[in-house]
Length: 610
Image (tube, rainbow, N blue to C red; front, top):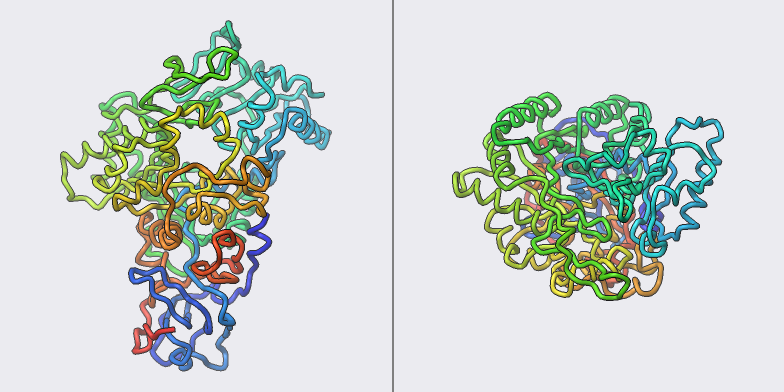
């Protein structure tokens, strides 16, 4: 992929520094000089040079003032007047174990493939495992469901049955909300005409029948009896693969956005073997209680679980595993044809065999959580010091979450310093844009989704209708009211390409030279993306550094380059703030490092100008 080929490890120095503090005249372990060092601090300070000692930043300033920090053992790196150093990236929403697993399994690699190509690839995966029995499931990942559904017409379990196998098969869409299974999978899972759709999920039916079609949405995938859960060792291998990709992307901190005790066991194992190369924050996944009477028990369970799993120490040289938040799914996804996201007004659907799309109230999902129960749970969590990240894709889900937060503020005012993140916000109603700032709700956005792609063109936009399609991916409109935007990739929903996403955040268009961008597929995806306001370069880069660190309550230690903060640093081949828009995603050079939080020297030259 484009970014990983550009993004190379410049140096390993200061990766594993032990604790300690610098004195005013001790030589530093590492010095960067003759470059553009952007702090991303409150003043957006820029420097020529930086010194790192015992894993923390001990100096920022001019080339002349850094000289006392250079000793005979100091590793000195010349940025050659063109490279740019900045804080390591902090991705506030991803799923690294499943992302790593996708790198290792039968993978359609997000490609816009027609039915024949999809079936051919799945058959090749089957043929490559001759040792498997008829009872062994095949799991297929990263499927571009939208292109497949648009190009191939009705798809059912029998479409997969043409493959030369008796094995159960489940093919999962890239967004991990749609699951396509063959008849063998339905049979072994005992999914029949009498099987009811579970809460938070849909068992789709054949037209004019109650028989399952072979398409399962969201929580309905839980009805499947396979594949067998991965072993702990397999998940550890997936985590290793994910961390390698994070290093290549310059991600030094991540938040796993739907975690369990198994997630904890995996990353504890990786940490124990010395392979934890990024700081990990984890959201404990919870489901909606049946009534408000069950809220207290749920909150107690969350407090007990997060207390047991959380490393309470301050962030230090070695990456820690932090648990102080929950994940809540209020709806599914708005994308056509899944349409499990909760909307204020009905989806538009095709009328018969015509080209006309009109509102259809028959497919109009409700939020998975009621406002009353969500408000009660948020109140209980906030009062116990637990933060929350809430999946809200449709405008009704967004409003439900904002209304629940409004309920808390009506009761408690501005007394509590909470972090409640609303993730995705794919379509929002303009009347709710100012409420993010008013309620101190943090919008967590995936900028890359504003690219022109098969997700939106042509059916996705028609599905939203002529008015609502103007309110997609509205991070710029939300920011206009004073809200600070936070970035989360949601990997592996699409390829992990943080710099492509940053480029889209600034330009709302893809990169035709990047195979991770739909623009590389040519027309109609190589033009402007979803209309809307964009972010400035400063806003975009802050969303994935200091603002995402603030959301994680880690901004005292990471997210900006300041004396005394951890030395999580990446280096770009060119200056992000100066290259042309089309080149924003093409200049990453160096993955990040860790530092310590011990306070260092704050001397006269700390703010020396470049």
